[in-house]
Amino acid sequence: MTLRAVRPTGREYLALVTDLLQRRRLADPVAGLWEAADLQWWYTRDPHPDDADAVVWLDGEVPVTAAVFTRWSESRYGCDVLGDPTVRDTWRFVRRRCGELEGVTIEMEIDPASAAEAARAGFTEPAGAYAVGWLDAGDRAPVRALPDGYALVARPEQDGPHPMVKRNGAEVEARLRDCSLYDPELDLALRKDGEVVGYAMFWADPRTGVGLVEPMRVEDGHSGRGLAGTLLRAGLDRLAERGCDRLKVSHDVGNPAAERAYAGAGFRFQQRIEACRLAEAGDQLVVDQGER
Image 1 (cartoon, rainbow, N blue to C red):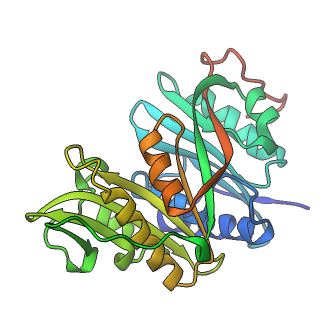
Image 2 (image 1 turned 180 degrees about the horizontal axis):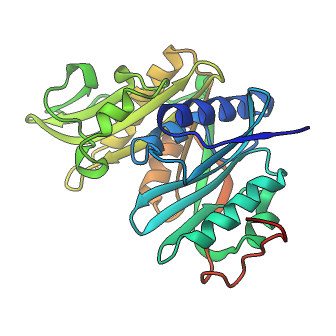
């Protein structure tokens, strides 16, 4: 198989990684770490406006694998290998790009299928872990009533800036509109006295039948009232209404409140994913001879 490398940007990047991850999920119900919706959500933070941080390898017009660096901030990057983890060119690009990025932290969530290559590329310093939970839509817990004074409002019925502007920047809503899986009716906020006190987004992928929860938050001062559970269950109902038969969520293993809310809705956590940082620059990078 001869692969052709492309360096997509902007919406072309978004379309290719979406297609790649959807194909991956259709081929295997559990392989890989990410859904297409994960990468669409990341796009709101980093729309890949230039060609430095992503390469996709195509077989004809079909995306087979990709290496993606996501700029979470000026000093922090995520690095992910998507699709087929056995393509050597993917890891060559990872090592080369890591060598070019100086003075920044680079993290990778380690797929067991590519753990050896990740270590060879220098990702050996522990950086936390998260748990992945799945739920058959038919087994989800019923929605509970909200406490008095709280209301659940989808984005089309909201006024003013998007609730995630504070944490995700002023362009978050415009970038969401670029995402093929974004549905404003699944973009929910909790309000009390006209103030947004919680929010969650739910992503329905009609191609794979997977519904994703990402992100979700209840503001400090409103916890302990069952709000997160009600918000979560309401969103899961909407995903099921849109035809999703499998539902997915992940959380940091150091967040017991999130685990309780998700487990209460019916999620069962069967996978633990370790994250690693790139070790000291250059210390463990192995570059094949002939690389440029």
